[in-house]
Length: 389
Image (cartoon, rainbow, N blue to C red; front, side, top):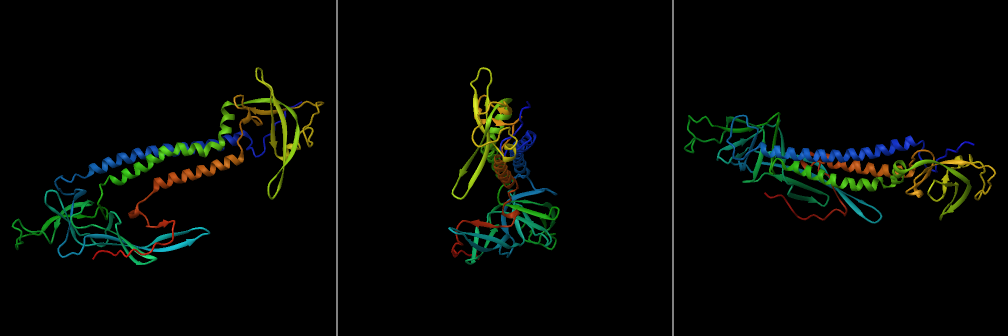
């Protein structure tokens, strides 16, 4: 008589399907971990390169790309460079809590002619044309409340502040350049160092150029440490599959009869179907187990009936993926199969982990993205802060 080939209730069969899905989950998390390690190391290298790109004490020279020094306002100019962001606030109220969101509505970059005073004492004039793209990397440390649901944030270069600038250094006209005696004569050509846009862009940063790369390296390095721990819990529901795949063996178990039973909860009654089987291997005690089936497979059994069949007139055998070291993890069928429910749970958890890796990898600071912020309370009351004159 042929051996029955059945799979447990909710099992993903054939086994190749289980292996494919579980393998994809394993490889996706392994790939995410390798990506975090690789990108963290790459960011560390980029930080070193960025730090070495500018030497504050290096002599100024034509076509230099980076300049470092302190900020000096241009003659009769109220400020040098500032970025102001307008935000509007909104609230959402849930059953037991209220949250708020600040959404960026407008961003305004203002620049007046100013200078970067080099360590040598020479000054580099900054006066870009209106079509140049100016980027400021700085702290948004100024706030101005308009009303409870409207506010502004600002980052600004201040007098005497250290700044790193990227552009292209040229010798050209400087209206505030003076002769060696400190006054301008009619022969004075009024030339000096100016920083012009490189590929239409001027970048200014009050933090070392490698700082943003170090932040990225730190975030990805932390993720590389946490990811194996989180991946373990994400894949934990699939542990029985891995055990069956690596430590299990296909055996022909003795079919001991069919059984149905019901379970009840508060609102419903569920009908269950199953079979009993026993596994006898040389040198080990006989192992008896009940395996749950779906109704379709239950109808294929030789003597389906309520209660355990005790008939021995028609001995029958059934395939079981048996795990000698952990018999309770054995399952019906040939090859290792995974529970569809367990696979779904692990898949959802893996998707959350991959989304978190993507978020960390693609994270942008305020100067490279809209400034949208969220809080777990109602909109705060205005603090009364205003921009300094």
